[in-house]
Length: 565
Image (cartoon, rainbow, N blue to C red):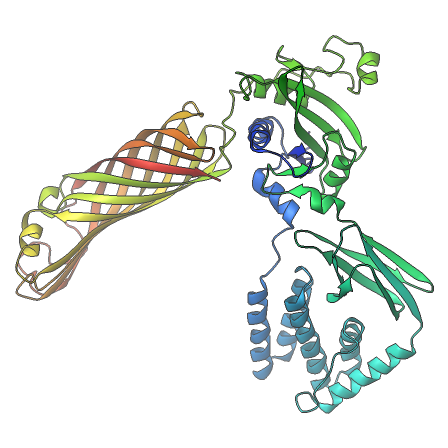
């Protein structure tokens, strides 16, 4: 629940949980549906994208290629005499490289940055400032070779001094084991072998990580002193993460490691969603855990009908799991909703609380994600006037537009976003006459771009919708060899004041819908430009505001495919 004003909302993730290999399609769909409804009731509920990012690791501060380019820029700054700026850039790059997953390429870049930092400090006569960078470099790569022909003698000399001092330093043993076979072990970013690994190293702090084919662990910081420092790379939780299935966990439902996984993901609470069979009936079960206390808060289930939630079942289960209130007979609670507090505690479910009733939400479409992409193909007829009392039929008689929609969901039924359309036009009147001359080539295109809001009336297998938008429109005409002057380009542009759309989507696959639409858009060309000769006397030979601004309309029908992310 949300904390006091200004406090951070507790994070809750809704995860599908099933034994290896992980959640199946029907559990994934049920989890998506519950997550969407719970998010409307409770602040701090992570969406699908945020949950996946926690499982796969937050995007690095900079990509490896960008860091290489930044390193080159630091070198340019050095050559320009901007030494302090170059050093600042290199320090920032070093920090960013250490945020990347350990590997051969990232370690090579880190090594390059360490050498450049040390060399720059030595060039400025600051030997003491260079030594910490050299020490870090030698500890991470004690066998690193330096070619005297490529590096200044003073740098090679300081590296050899650091290497000799490191050999004389007291040592300890670093022993790294792994719960997964074949795990590669990295120490201070450098790969040192496959677990188990046992190394004799100078005493001090070391950063250890591990990687298998599909999971990573670490970094883990270990302090090596006298004796042996043992580090265990536990891949149990990382290997159980299924970012593309739910997201979910490949664990037995009810396994205590569910709470451990939630802690690994930095969650305050976790709602585990599973499926069970009992007496020939299928149920969706939800278990809400308090991660910090490691305790089960409440658990409930709903019986499925033909493999799907019954009408109102998902909303009723979500309301119970969030509030503790049993508002529907569809929700079954261990111990029963009428059980005494002691009976409910004995059954594993704490006493019910009685918060204000939250109105039940309509069942959500499980496949509808946080955003969607739409692609349209249509046919549009132009109505009204262009300018100078020129009818649209004399300019563009029709067009075949292709439109891309990018929408972000702000509630169960409402989405907002942007659109961009490109249409191939068919000329009319004088345009058609010019383009019909022997040897003439013509291009006539219409470009529209803007913002829109869409409302779905009944999200589900069949979803009627309506949308409104506004934007800007460009109309381009280019011809060669169609006039006495040779080449002419004409551009009209102005605001699309309003477009009204309506249609219906039919679900063809879990994340894909297809359906027809109609649209009426009203706009007005504000400015015009003509380039080339031969337009003299045509009435549109100008550049700037149109003196006679006339309105026009596009009446469009077509088909839209929508993919939900």
